[in-house]
Length: 67
Image (cartoon, rainbow, N blue to C red; front, side, top):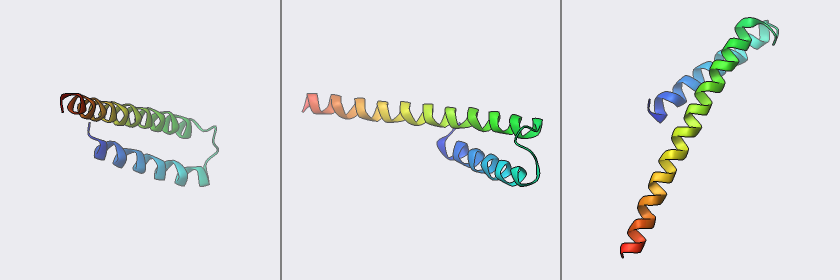
């Protein structure tokens, strides 16, 4: 999954969660499941973003050593 897709899914679930919280209690099962789903996507996004950053950093460090 790409970062753009993850951002879109996070934004959609965040909007849906905030909208549903206006009408439903935070302990409602739908809200809890949606919140857990959002947490999973945020974790995936952070992990993917971190690995992308580390690869980019490693690339530039090796280029500095060569030059």
